[in-house]
Length: 309
Image 1 (cartoon, rainbow, N blue to C red):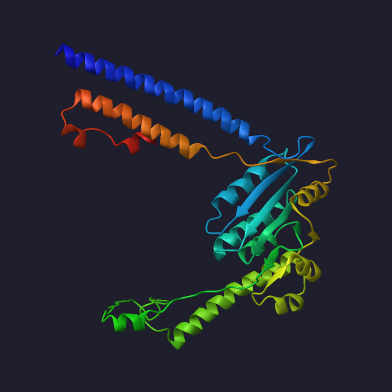
Image 2: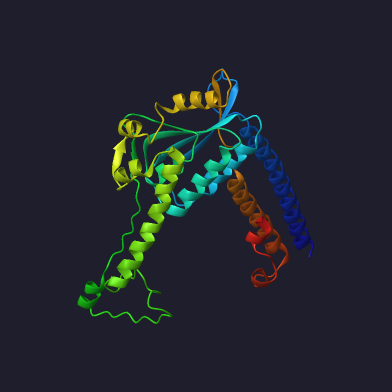
């Protein structure tokens, strides 16, 4: 009995020490995160704070970009924002959400786009809502258009003697199914859907770039163009790189001097949460082993996931 009591005391002491370590790490990470909200990178001599938001790769979720835009929009010391775009596009709705957020922010402070290697399709869509757009002469941009691709494997299924039985509430419920050939009605529906979304894209370009639709429509056939061509067509404002865009942001903010670039804080929340879960799990496991019979582990203790929340 005495040995069991000693084991329990040691386990409790270990758990208490672990919780102390977790608390200390929490404070430490909070300090790091608070520091990262301030200035990070950029010109050391600059005084005009310019927020930097990056949009890279395929656009599938707008969440991080929207959070960064909102963060810099709410900070009074941030005089302008540069959005660095290096993306071939992606899903329609996320691109629209970022575009709409950029349009909203421009009502309170300048938002300048800096196009990298490629800013096409959805990458171009979100860009046209900005106060000014910069691109290098060799940047690939444009690609104003919408596409949907649907495979058909019905003949392969026939060859393999596999049959799909479909029960649906309406004739269009299995639109785009790869297990049957596309009908004329299917094609008409998809074309009307694509045309509607394309019209939204076209309107965003016309409104954002303040161009007549008669000038935009001939080049809005999905073609990719260079930064040089985009400048000639009025789809961007200036040729230049990231530093030029940052200087332009200062100019649009009616400030003078070099920009002091401010990046979003590094997200340490998920790492800290994982650490808390792992540490809590180890501490609780020690208590379980000391105080509970083996089968009690399955039924009497909360999960480590629950403790980590």
